[in-house]
Each structure stands twice: as structure tokens, then as C-alpha cells.
Length: 407
Image 1 (spheres, rainbow, N blue to C red):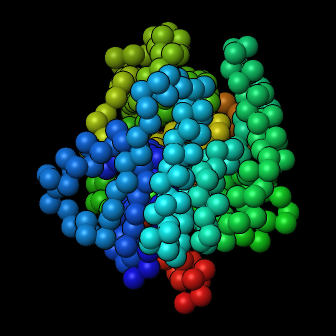
Image 2: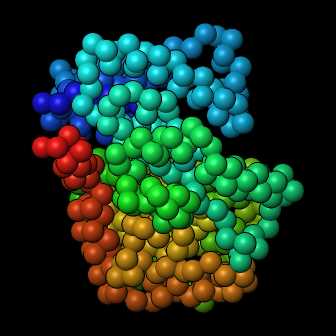
């Protein structure tokens, strides 16, 4: 049994998204090794409550949580997305100070930065005299070909984000982290393309997210009604406007189709105004579904429409496919890496009007071809539950750990 140190700033059970990433890697690695987990102080209550209440078999004896606390005055930096980067930087510095002392006593065999999954925000654990594994994301950008309507503020954010990506490749800290890494787990092709040539031999493209357990596949009802789901937060980078415009292009063709739009955010009023004519008849809006109910919610539908323009993981698509839904999606980022043409209608980025038209025809294809749709759903179910089940992904990771340790 080896000693593994994880940097998992985000690490909480049943929270979804990045907290679930940190949690799942921790509990799965602990099935074989002894694991120390550096995480936020305010994750403690959730983790301790889960430990008291769950009946799930978890190797608690192999898990040592180290809750890293920052002084109250530093919480100032945690207000909004801009401050989050500085707060994480300060947290990572404190975590490294703790890890440095702990490493003297425990002599870790592997050190792995799990969350944040960020190309431009490495932790400092690469400075320890131990093999370092770094999970990396954040090299994705919105294709300029699309010409997506954005505010000046949104355009500026994307512009600055691109500059930060480029600057990162000249950062001494980031290049040193890559140099010290034994393995770079990179989530998308776009992020991999940013890795300097001298470190590309360390790169493996693999999603950081996964499926925590195998769920039953959806049952197909014996009727002509088709239910389509468009899901994504109502912010510009999720591209929900593309999906809505595609739906509106074909909605009058069909009397047997109901569309559900799941999400909320600053563009809610605009999206509802676009759909006003059909709300209550062919379109319904759902603001939120509890995390523990989301699988059953997906099963109420026949396929998913995903329009994320840049996304390193795309948990929405993965969860939908894991219960047997085929998808229509933009062929970018994480969803591009996790899907095959056999069970996904993948639309390459292109000018907006043409993109909407092709997305609409992709939706129409799945509406009109019931047998094909159901066959694609079964292929999606089998593929996702094989390749992206956390326990299966962790078996592969543990083999990489053994290789790095020379076993």
C-alpha cells in the first residue's frame, strides 16, 4: 500500500461538478492506497456528515482529510470569479506549507493535484521531492467561426482568458510544474495543444469527470410522443441560444414532440421571450433539478441537446448518456472527447446561422428515427458506463501510479 497525497481544493460528496471530481478520486484511490487529502476547511461539515449518515462502503480508514483554513481577512478574495483565483492561490500556498511538513514524516510515493483542474492555476505540490501527477484543463476557447452574440464584457472576458492561456505557457511556475510532472492528465485536445512540445510525451488525454455508479438504462415508452431535453446554465458560454434557435426552426414540423429547457441564469428572460409562443404547449422551462433526482429526470426524455461552446468536461452530457440518451452536440471540448459518431450527432463549429440549421437537422434526425435513436442510446449507455465509471478510470490511474513508482 503506497502513500498518496491529493490536492483537492474542491472535494465534497453528492455536490456534482468539480467537488464530485475531488471526492470520487479520493475514495477510489483509497480502495488500494493510503490517501491524505488536502481540501478546503468549509468542506469539513459536508464530509463529516456524510461519514455519519452514509451506508455506502467507503475505505474511511485509508483516508486522512487535512482541512486547510485561511484567515477571515483572506475571504475577501473569494467574492466572485475574479477573486476566486487569488483565493485559490493563497489556499494553495497554505496547503503546500502543510504538505511540506507532512512529507517529511510520511514520505509520499505519489503527489497528485486533482482540483482545481486548471492549466493556469497549478498547486505548489510539484515542489515536493516526490513524483507529481497533474490533472489539467482550461485550454478550451469559443470558436470565432460561430460569431456568437456576446456583450462587450463577455467578449473582453474571453479575450483576457485567451491572453492568460498564452501567458501561462511562459510562466516559470507552470513550466516548472510540467517539468516536474511524471504524468499530465489533460482533459481535452484543445488543452493538450497548449502543452509545450518538450512535455507532450507526458500527456494523456482523459476526462477528469466520471460516473459514480452504473444506473439502469431508460425504458422506452410504446407511443409516438418524443421528449427532447436542452440543458445548460443560461450563460453565454453554454450557448443555449443556439439550441433554442434550432428548436424554433423545426418546432412547427412536429405535433408529437415536447421540448424541455433545463437551466437558469442571466439570459432566462430573453430565452423565455423567444419561446413565448410555445410555452405551455410544446416547450416547458425547468429551473433546477436536485442532484439526486437528475438521473430520473434524464430518463423522462428521449435525447439530449447540448450546446456548450467551451467545456472541459460536460457532466450534463455524460450523465444523460449514462442512462441511455443519445445526444446532439457541438463538437468541441470535453463532449468531443467523450463521444463517438455511433451515439452522438456532432456538429462542428461554423457561422451561427449555418450552425443553427445543422443543429436543427440533427434534432430532426433523432425525432424522426425512433429505432436509430434507441440504438444510439444503448451504445451511449454501454460506452459511458465502461469508459467513464470512476472505479474503472481509477483502475487505469492506479496502473499509472504503479508505473511511476516502478512497480
